Image (cartoon, rainbow, N blue to C red; front, top):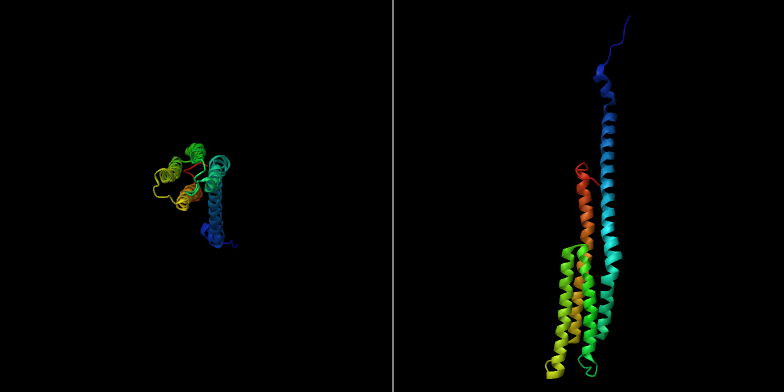
Length: 196
């Protein structure tokens, strides 16, 4: 009686090897995708809290929006050189009070990023310095017939400072998004080292 020969382990593995290898590769890719998506979602959530909640819901309505309204009113209220009968002192005092209130509210950016708050503070101080310079040049022109200050030049410099301040905030938002993308990619490389 003839019994068939037993193939052994090698004989059974060779015909099934491609499907086993493809199955292992698919399982590895699925596991990697799972950890990548989990990490990406946790960072997107953290970024959303920082960007959407703090910057858009808390800080922007109390700081950035009032500053933009103040700046747009300033273009109209800033006394021109030719207007001698206007009560300039009361206008400048009103402008200074409004700017002081807004600059105090910009201090709240320390909650999000102390470096951002420092940069914003520098821009607000530059804005205030330029207003003060224009004010005293105008006063000197009126009282001592000194050189007339250029209102368009002052407004242009103030607009440049305003744009610099807004760029700081925009760049911070861009950095928050870039940090979330980068750290999500890094975390997905080594998912067992960090807990989401």
